[in-house]
Length: 199
Length: 199
DNA sequence: TCATTGACATACCGTCGGTACGTCAATAGC
DNA sequence: GCTATTGACGTACCGACGGTATGTCAATGA
Image (cartoon, rainbow over all chains, first blue to last red; front, top):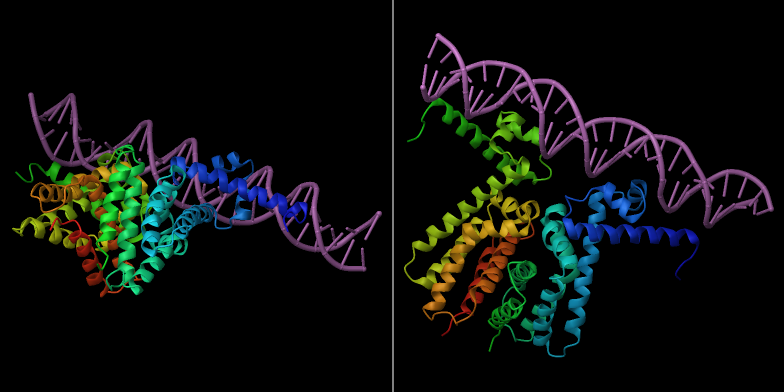
């Protein structure tokens, strides 16, 4: 199925180079500080190629990079959760995994800082929903239905928890926090989750 | 004390016009979408005036606007909290007030979306700390010392709660949520706070 | 009264995102 | 196998934008 014709092969290669280099540059210096000239040079192509693959220009390219990063996080969280049998453990382990995944430098800035500003909060939120917040919502819903969590609307909960973890990840990755803070943050988060339980 | 000389009076007037119009434009269309030309025209001045008052240019102007917005929120939260006698009520009422204040459209985008992206998360966080998160930290600290909250490091808590409220405010102000969601979000937040109590 | 300075306005520059157009090889049809 | 077509770019250029250097003129202080 792969490599049907030298044409599509080259195409995919160029696209991947663009994605890879832009992700690196965006995460290192931020969306606004990276120019297209530098971007295409790093990828070994020209602006013509960029606009051929991403008609929307810089914004479109960023959108693709963001989606990639978000889905990576989403997969990591889902995988960690599915390794657990107990629904409650799926929630807590998933949250821990999210904290770890969102702390990675190559993810941080793109997903949590530039994302909302470049694409607007609504679109960012929709993408986040599709990639990873969806899992959180599903986990909470099933826990409510199972009676493990006290009955309540899950949507506000998703936003509160999602926001808490996002900010915590930002803090944990910042120079103002040390490696020992991760445990404290995880513990505090666990306590907050515990508060939702019915028993 | 006010109006010492026609000179300082005009100066302050120009500065306020710049601040007011830029805050309006930034909150309406976002930092990146507003050009300096439009900005200075709306304020009735020229770029020379802008760079005279804000040597750092667009970034400096945004920083001043952000600081203004943050301190407004901080004052509202502090005022609401101080109206309460019970320390625990100070915390909960302060959080509710923050939710209300941060939902205002003229605050939202500047404080929660563009802020971290334009100035970087570190600087944004430092300003937030000085303006409003400080109050949250103090309230939590005194509650821990009073034995009302279980002993634990407060810094992670501050970040978790702050992030939760920020994201909740963003959601509550978005078209994807209705006015009835505010009560649900407030209730969920209250439950999370309740989880911190020792009794 | 006059020199100084502060609060701007004007003119200009480099850079950046975006677009129009040209090029050339890979594919498709005969 | 030959040719028409198309797709994947490269090149040249444009307008707009943020930023700066310089000019101007009234308020201030001696």
